[in-house]
Length: 182
Ligand code: HEC
Image (cartoon, rainbow, N blue to C red):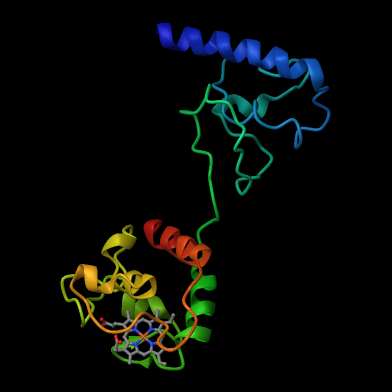
């Protein structure tokens, strides 16, 4: 109760600060206040913003991290940070190009429809783990094989792609987010 009153006060004053040097005619650039605010006070006066009612701005800009955003409404909506998850199509395209030359048949076909032989399918090198464990990259042996951490989970062999360039940190992060989102 106290907390929300305090937050309300902070938000209200923040809103007026923003209003001072923003005429709010350009919602894309007058960033941080709109997105994370709780519903009650119209935060940016002058700006008709009915869409903030549920904390979600209508402008679909989920890809934009807002490092400078104030903490006031931080519990309202998680602000995405860093690179976004790969889509399944993007993962397939990477696997087809970088793995499919070797892994193109059972037991693990990464050349096409990789989910069939990886998601929820046991690794043969580390049978305690699935190749891809839905929702948990840290239990996904395939992810460890790409990260070079396979030995730490009871696995073996080379970092994948064998003989090829390692996945970049960004690629690993995006793949990790894809797996964690399954
Ligand atoms: C040049 C051939 C080659 C390429 C390219 C390659 N692999 Fe492999 N992969 C192997 C071989 C050989 C093994 C078994 C020996 C080892 O692990 O070092 C293996 C094993 C694996 C395993 C362990 C399977 C299990 O059931 O435990 C995974 C997971 C894997 N690879 C994933 C990938 C991924 C993902 C890619 C693409 C990014 C890839 N590999 C690219 C040759 C390759």
